[in-house]
Length: 149
Image 1 (cartoon, rainbow, N blue to C red):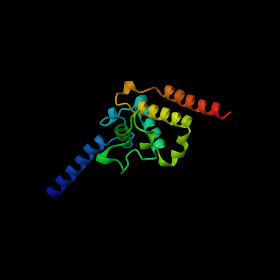
Image 2 (cartoon, rainbow, N blue to C red):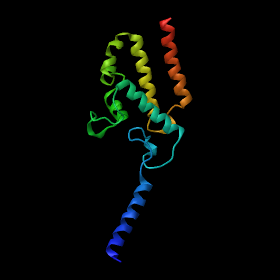
Image 3 (cartoon, rainbow, N blue to C red):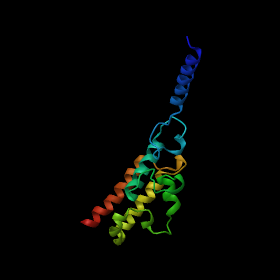
Image 4 (cartoon, rainbow, N blue to C red):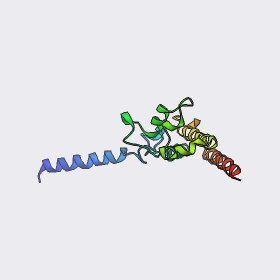
């Protein structure tokens, strides 16, 4: 038997075993910070992922987009370029700009953006529950429906 070959096969199998135990569970860009190096899941991490989806809808960018400088993800990008003092257009999908002339729509988009940022807070205990997220979205939708009547 070739001991060199056996040694290489053993090392390869051991490496594969080690790698499989440290592979991330989830999709890059949607993983909550507290889950970056663990396999645990929680309601708070689901809320974080949902916040990422809301940001994607508002910005029409991917969670990890080539347009973000320095390897930022969508959460860090939005937090780095937008604040209350900056126009919403810096983060919003340009296809939605025309709708922003209506101050009511601008207010609703801002509310959803705030909600998305709350969902993606770094500290899990600072994120809203999914029940709160649904209620906030229903409130935004309800105000839209009442305006259209």
